[in-house]
Image (cartoon, rainbow over all chains, first blue to last red; front, side, top):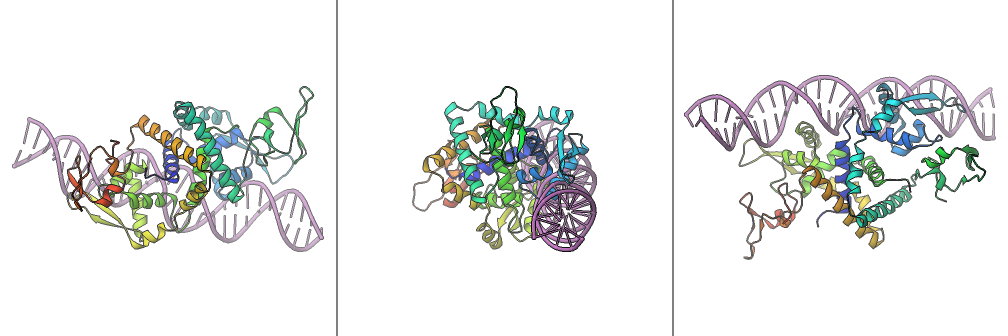
Length: 183
Length: 183
DNA sequence: TCAATAAGGTATCGAGTCGAAACTATAAGG
DNA sequence: CCTTATAGTTTCGACTCGATACCTTATTGA
């Protein structure tokens, strides 16, 4: 087989990119919207999105402007820091996500043999981990898997982040966080 | 783990894309140059590149113009069809490929445990095959693995393509072809 | 043989991407 | 306070990308 793994990944990436021109959004706008739908309350900011996407803040600023113009998101002022913004997905944004072009890929993956699927997941995770380690990138894992996560066992009580010293709702702890570090 | 396989692939794709802004080329220009370096003589045309990249011919035309402006490629008229063009990589194009940003990814992959590497390759190939089958995409496999490939056993003699009814040099049969179909 | 049609490419438009650099406003730290 | 860091925006220029219209050369079929 003459295809290197890098070539395979690049080809896959190209296909994904081409498919992401639907629903009136551009590929990067889809990525931003997806991120915002998964991020917890510490991570729904232009700055966190900038780190996630690995782009410059100027570019991200423009992408968010486009998404706001299209009615998919709404920027509101952060409560604690008057420089900061919190980005919220609108109803329209939510409903667009129901037609996320990435869903097709998930369906194709779901149809793979179970062994292949497992190997795909495991090897991709290893690779991503290696790449992020190489370049000191943030992992953006789920909040509840973080070394700073403190579980509260009282019923209904929120959990706690010992890095930011902030309470964590059940919802927030299920979501991905810019500060997450493996336990 | 909260990451779906599609999310992992998308994230990998984003990292690759961000890294591909080096050497004065843009990500798409790198992809085009890489393709041209691997394609056999039936596949070094704007049309074949269009199919490979899955874009519209207008876009590919512009990308090739940019590459030609930068001195990486040279367009020459096709001999058999006066509409067609053959694209050739220049010395400068070749030397740029030596600093292909994708090489870093290959190095990272090479450093993975052998088992992981094998699983990565196998599962990615399965996935790509499934995707291409779903949408009837061309495989762009190596010429010599094609059902139309006819090997000539006389020493030094060229091989033969029974689809295009054309002789195949050893070099061409090692390269990828737009017409390739698994044997 | 001579239209009609197909196929290979280019030109142009408009929206968006993207890095770079300059800029504004607020925070934080001596 | 004054300096420096941080969060975002703005502007610029080169490029991406689909859509559409267009030009030229092949092919087909009546």
